[in-house]
Image (cartoon, rainbow, N blue to C red; front, side):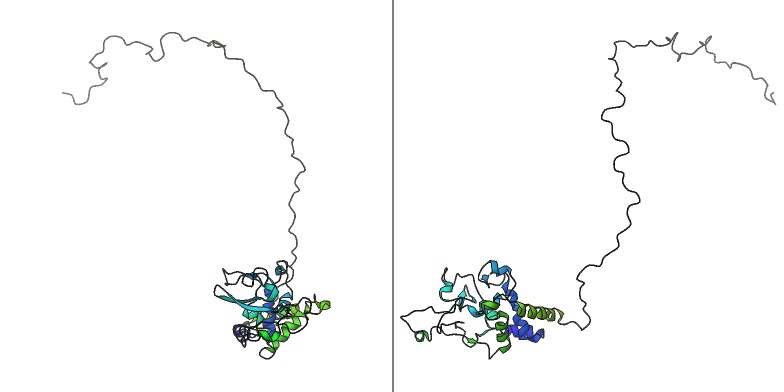
Length: 287
C-alpha cells in the first residue's frame, strides 16, 4: 500500500476512502500477463467481470487468500478448497497486494492467510483450513498464520472496505451498492479535477443544444418524371433496301470532250524567240 499512498494520497491529494473506492474498478475485467504479469480475474465468475458493483469488496473479506508466486510474479489466490480446481497455481482468481492491503496488514506477516478457520462456518465464506476432526487448529501455528486486519495501520481503508461491502454476511443488503457508488462518484471527480484551479473546469452539457432546422428546398421534387419514357419507339425505324449492283440513278450528264484540265485553245504556230511586238514608243534619247 506504499505506492497507493504515494500516488493517490501524496500526489493527488485524495483520501484512503477515495483510493479504496477507485480500486473498486477492479470488479471489471481481467489481468493479463502480457501487460502486468498477472493472469486472471478479481471476481468469482466470468459473468461478474462485466458488472460494476461492490462484489470486489465482498471478495476481499469473504475469501481466504494465500500468497503465491508464478514465474516470479507474486500475487494472491484462493486457499483451501477454493483452489481445488487445478490447484492454487492455476486458479484464475487473484488479488494484488494493492487490493488486500486495504483490509489486511500484509506487510506485518507477508506469508499469512487472510482467513484462518476459528470456529463455525458461515455459508458463503471460505477459509484457509477446512474442518478436519483429526487435527487441531494449533497444529498449524507456524505453517499458516492469519493476516492481521488493517484497522490499526489503515483504519480509513479498513472501514471503507466493510462499508462498501455492506456486510457480506447480511443477505438482506447484499445488492445495496449505494455506499460504493456514491464514494466512487466523489473520488472520481476529485481525481479527474486534481491539479486544475478552481473554476477553470466546466461541466459538459448532458444533451446537445437543439438547432433550428434549415429552410426547406426551394422546390419540391416532382412525383414522377415530366415525360415517361415510351415503351417502344414512336416512329418505326426506316429500313433501307439492300444495295443494288448498279446505281439506282444514272448521272445527270455524262462529261463530253477532253478533260477540262487541257487548254481550251491550242497554241498556234511555233514559239518565237522574238518579242511579240515592238515597243509602242522608243525610249527617249535614242541615238
